[in-house]
Length: 123
Image 1 (cartoon, rainbow, N blue to C red):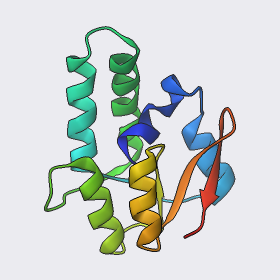
Image 2 (cartoon, rainbow, N blue to C red):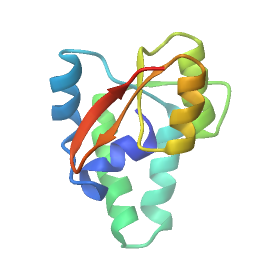
Image 3 (tube, rainbow, N blue to C red):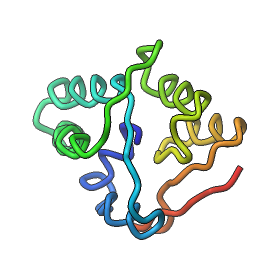
């Protein structure tokens, strides 16, 4: 789960965990520690705006995930590292450049399709 995925409930009106259950069934959710740090930074750095609210909600939702340490501090790089290490079968993101990096590496990506549903993109 990346930062944008955890912020989807507020920013895109997506019930992200319900959608993932529909797509994948019962799975373990994982997020890198760098994503948690980014959410914490966004939740205080953006004031009281929608981004801060979305980041705060995302931080709460991240409690459903196992947090994994990586060797990098940038959230996107951490997700790529986890995928390269084989720690995830899918990456959930709404970030286009990250999606493209992952697909180039052969990683399946789950992202927004339509207004408020998620879809799997195969490499």
